Amino acid sequence: MAAYGNYATAAEDKPASSLPVAEATAESASSPESALDRRLAEEREAARQRFAITTHKPNYLLLTYNASANHRFEQLDAAEIKFQLSLKVSLAEDLLGGDIALAYTQVSFWQAFNSDISSPFRESNYEPEIMWRWVRPLRGDSLYNRAVVLGFVHQSNGRSEPLSRSWNRIYLNLIFEYQNLYVSVKPWYRIPEDPKTGPTDPSGDDNPDIADYMGYGEVTAVWVQGKHRVGLMLRNNLDSNSNHGAIQLDWSYPLGNKMQVYVQYFNGYGESLVDYNHSVNRIGAGLMLNNWL
Image (cartoon, rainbow, N blue to C red; front, side, top):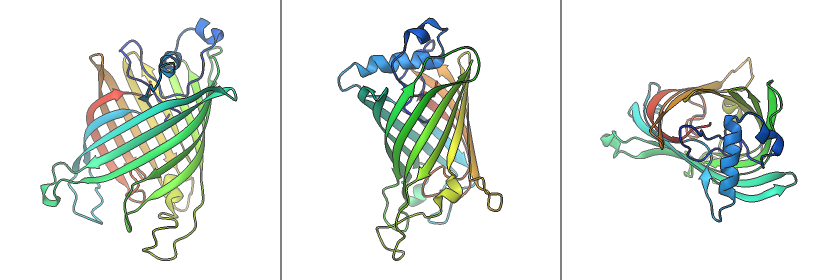
């Protein structure tokens, strides 16, 4: 559901959402309030504040164990700290029927316990994006397309050759709601780059085969059951001859009014750019500031 911008920190009775935001209408206000509707109201209120910054994707800190660490470049510990910082700011409201937002997400992997290699930050991925999102009021009790998001996103790891990785994409995100279930269908198109003239060429495509591992989109679902939040993310390249994909499972539960306990499991390709073509099998637990919903 990392589609438009997610959520701000919310109290237990007001969960935050990652789903796109546009102005709530009288029709949606008169309907039973959903987790998405609560998030819309929170985002709209924040947008009225000058210089307001809200959260975008989940912000969390995890102690993780990776059973299939990639030792190609250095000897890594299976245990490492993973954290994500994700923020968003509104640029314009009610433009062409929707809103414009700018977001930035950073996910880092820290070999905190690996003193043999001086406990480095092994990898950080930087992801600025700009998006236009349109939301319509909820109608009825059936599966319903609540939001459409169109965006451009750049992702890179800021490293030099041979570890440099980057790509640019245009995406369309369709957000659906059905009772306590929220589903994001997010296809994307990778913007082509010129090939490198040689292995040390700083220009040109760092990873021409990244779509073979990351695919051409992802589907994310979030189920809200009381205070529990259960998430599922699926990616696949849909190639029967050389199939690659990924699955991520999430669970969170409030820990007081400001934090949530968070468990994340990831299996497959593309968890980080440097390992986009290496299969990862990671489980982690820790604290989350904000969830999808």
